[in-house]
Length: 130
Image: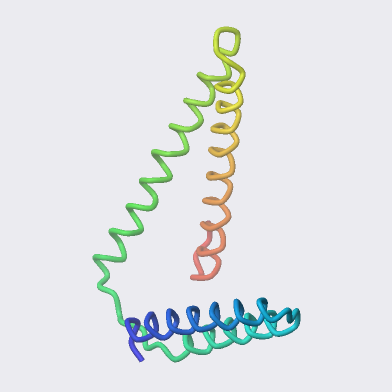
């Protein structure tokens, strides 16, 4: 099965599962919706194992890898600088903007942390040392 067929079958399974869950909730059943949802999840995982992967071109793989790195390299420092500016100007800004500054700083830290974790995981998975 190719990836397009997987998408069609998954969509069909989710729609039918939603209809069956809605009907079973309307009938007042509590166990049936959980059973249907579990069955749909297992069915989707089974369908995913039946998909034959298409080999990607190495150029496309490298381009997406560089684009992801560039997005992180631009976003994380941008968020941290914007957060730093908003927090440092807290005397003259409304409290909501100061809170936004803290949020941007926290987001930059979490983004960098997730990047490092993913880098460590994939470098260990593919046998190179980080």
